[in-house]
Amino acid sequence: MHRRTLLLGLSSLTLLAACGGDSAKFRNYSGPRITQIQVFKKKRRMFLFAGDDVVRKYRISLGGTPVGHKRFEGDGKTPEGLYYITHHNPRSAYHLSLGVSYPNAADRAFAEAQGRKPGGDIMIHGQGRKYRGRRDDWTAGCIAVTDAEIEEIFAMVQNDTPIFIFP
Image 1 (cartoon, rainbow, N blue to C red):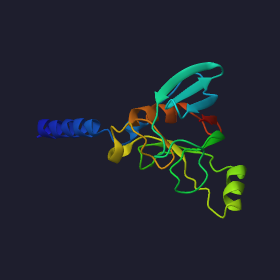
Image 2: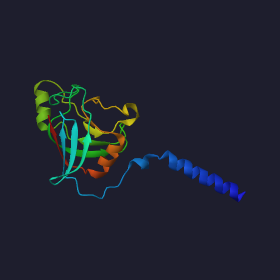
Image 3: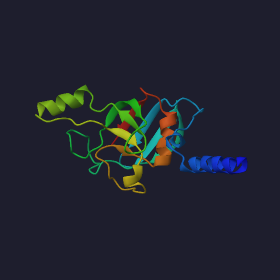
């Protein structure tokens, strides 16, 4: 009886470990502090910097209409300019995500002057199940990387880190 209980317990633990669960997506990072993020839309590249040193680089996907600065809600564009990481979202529909401070005051003022909404909810995020494996520009204006990459970025980048998004 004890042997059977022990075998059932070990089998259950093995099954749970194989499933991974939410904790599997959270990593630790003990490298240098990331001081800025630079995104180059045209080249579809994102770089994480510690001072003047590139610590990591990534291939990215952008909004479905990637050329030009995001101006309005629903335009499919990724913003350009200086923004900041605002928050970490561990329950993102896109695996994990980091909030970007778009729209800033200038973005809001421009949209308001045009009688439109600037949009929002711009993130650096993974692909989630629905978009896993895609490499084209498929987001609604966000910056997307693979799920494995967003796990790494999520651990490395702190809130208030500046993100420079270039055309």
